[in-house]
Length: 256
Image 1 (cartoon, rainbow, N blue to C red):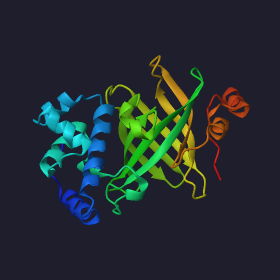
Image 2 (cartoon, rainbow, N blue to C red):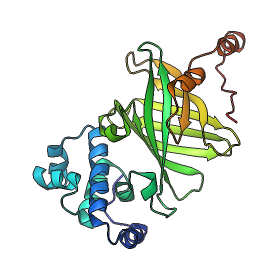
Image 3 (cartoon, rainbow, N blue to C red):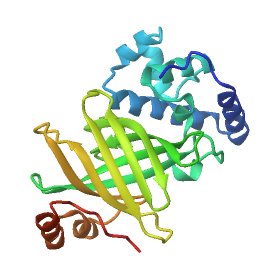
Image 4 (cartoon, rainbow, N blue to C red):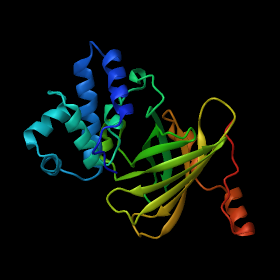
């Protein structure tokens, strides 16, 4: 995904940002720097590698990431091309209260929870959804197994891809940015309430064995207590009975 020519929508996006944050330039630089750093780290790129690929010094790129100097449009476009993201994704603010009120490329953030039976722990991941030109299709960044929201760059794996939403069903197809052979599929259903919690399954290659595997998952815009998650993430007797009887694993739970 290369962005050799900056499209008109991107310029419009920049003008909206400038108007919205006329007196908040320093915060914009901090947000952009954080976005560059987390995606660079998630993709396994060092400061030296990014600097070399955009023909800048390591110290300059470090200042970009710290927000101590501003980034010109051409350089931002170059960085986006190296990181394989749309330039607008680097301009998105990391906190909900600072979202830019525009439809194109707007950020929607979800937490994904799954349970690792071997390590006896809940795996927390973060999904960033960006609107595309199609109303029901989103561009996706997934930071899998991230210790916290502030350490997304140190996630165990970074996946990119797309999701398509159909009423109460949403399907994701994602690829590991470092190891393209590793692809994952996520399918979730949601209830009719406004809490936006979804339940479903995550299928792909298990990191430890590289064998196909499936986990139950819960998606939510908010952190959910572990005790509540355990009730939804661990396979139940009903699940096991269904697998034995039908030779299928079926998600039939709607959260009201």
